[in-house]
Amino acid sequence: MTTHRPGPEPGTEPSRARGRPAAPAGSGTVPLTVIVGEEELLVERAIGAALPVEAPDADRAPWGGADVHEVSGAELSAGELVMLTAPSLLGGECVVIVRAAQDASSAVAAELGALAAAMPEQVALIITHAGGAKGKTLLTALLKAGARRIDCPSVRRFGERMDFLRAELARSGRKADDGGLRALTDAVGTDLRDLAAACDQLAADTTGVITAQTVALYWRGRAEATGFSVADRALEGNLGDALAQLRWALAIGTAPVLITSALARGIRTLGQVGTSRGKGADALAAELGVPAWKIDKIRQQLRGWSSAGLARAHSAVAQADADVKGEGASAGYALERAVRVIVESRSAEV
Image (cartoon, rainbow, N blue to C red; front, side, top):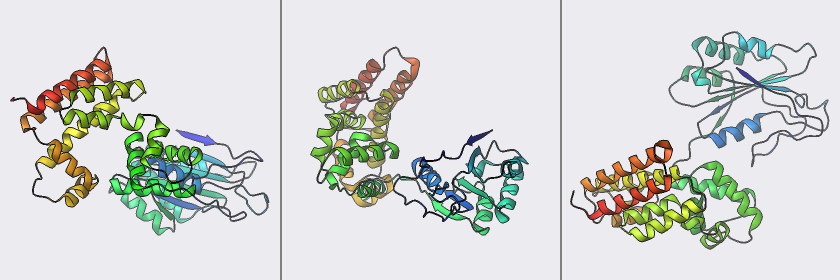
């Protein structure tokens, strides 16, 4: 199944990847682009940057009014590429976007490789590929055909997210100190779309260097009441604070499933740190994808925990997760029960 995007209307601006410079007027577009990686936000930006850019002088920018067709690699049928790239009766150019090309059948992969090796005039091809072993032959063929490659690697480690935030703010001419960056991830989470939107908001609505205090004031308590703060208080055995943080997090609209996810991650990280007592904080932080200062905090939380207690706490969170996803009558009650069991499991002899 294909999705057709009509070309931009006269006087409108086409989609562009935020933070990437537009192609110069008259430069046209690159006929063959392959975008490698699975980081959704970065892939979308790369697609936007690769799409045709309309220029004031239509004679110099033949791609301004191009039609854009989108199709999934898994859904693309053999022979369909020929129809998508065939010249229109009315003339004009077209752009074909093939997403997740690694899922294409062998016949379609062969067609993509052949098309890339002999690109028709007035046709541009933008292909996204996860970059793993699946479909590697196709990726190699595309690059051999001269495709421009844009890498969109996953942003998973703490340091990588910090670099992402710094780059996002720098695009708006803004800076944040380390405390502000940590507070931003605590308040918003790890999703790149959410983090990018938060950077835009802070850049537009605040002045000066962004600090932890800036973030706390802007989100009016959200930074102090996330799933991770609930998990921290529960794992430390502080029932009163954990319940208070939980109720506040729910009151400001934090999704219950995000809280169960934070609880599960906290318990899992405790177990990982607990079984790696001989490793230094820096080495363990790199392995787990968390900052080194957090390893010391987790080791303090480990006091009072046994393997049996962690197993019991994990079971309670698994039950809460099922309840908040529809099996229970009240998500709030399910989460409170899980928090109580976690706190009890920390020091209980089970």
